[in-house]
Image (tube, one colour):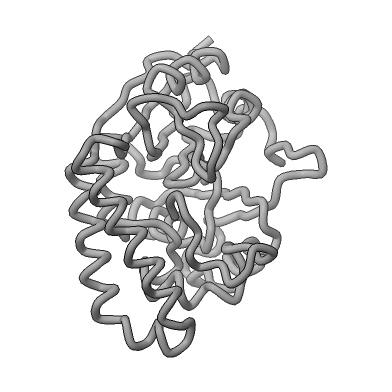
Length: 257
């Protein structure tokens, strides 16, 4: 999801609710809430060794990425979310053949990641951290649960400049602000890969899919909602083409000591 939330039916309703699952899956694909499908997941990890790793998914959503990595990369995946219904949904929809490789939980009562220190070879997050304002606290927790020399893999939006007071649904992180908060949390060997060109193709494919699904969406959710989703992604294309935002794959390593 991006800057607006056209899925919402009223200001008091959360976009991330169980009733919107069928809409998410119509737009993004089975068990997904992010653009690009499983092609984008493969590209996120394309130059990394992932097989048999024990990893943590920050913001696992409907569980689709965790299911995919467990099945296709033989990874053991744990996930953490803010929405309890997502934990239940992910467990209920996990393919039986990979269920033993999966574990899902919500943050604890103090908002902490509920896993022990030095538990994971890798922590990853795709399309989630643009909503997190207190990255300093979260990234320190990520550093703690990673094993020495463990890798933090992120796909997120980077902006050419920060917004005043970071107002709005998305936090406008620049490359420098992202680097700084990662360094402050104890990470090093931080790198940024600009995947905007690839991501632009994902958005264009999404619009083609939206055209095919227009009748289904409008019949169930209404013309206004469809128009909002359509316009949102048209605006996203313009933002990418005009360098107003960049899709970045960010890597950061925990110290080996």
